[in-house]
Image (cartoon, rainbow, N blue to C red; front, side, top):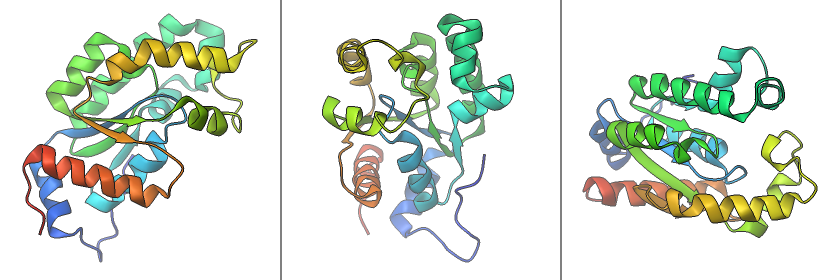
Length: 198
């Protein structure tokens, strides 16, 4: 779970350290659609801030002993969502950290309330064409195993975007380097936490 903390010989910049300190035992929780880059950006953000990184989907797979696709297939989405809520509630007890969540996690009202009480949510907002391009490369997305994945994606975005908008911080995920997105998140977090730039 702690695979992205900085090596001991490196220290975060003073303003980055101030963000980590301001979190206390809280978490920075990455939310948004599948393909938005929550895990890859979250891992880099954690390294930048010198705090651990956790991936809720990886933890769910570890707890279940099977892939998320297999959980969906064997037990159905309601069972998966129930397990997901329990795993995220447990992970939120272990801040400070950057926590990447699955695309549907923030939609659960209890999970959303837990995230808001124990951390700062960051919505990586991505346009449908960006998500579609990224998701075409992957075949492990259970919700997109439909006759028309693009129509399914569009429908999911229409349903979920109003809820994602409740996130504390919104940053546009687009086809630029992850470092640029991380920089924008750090700037937004400084603003949210009232930390002056050094």
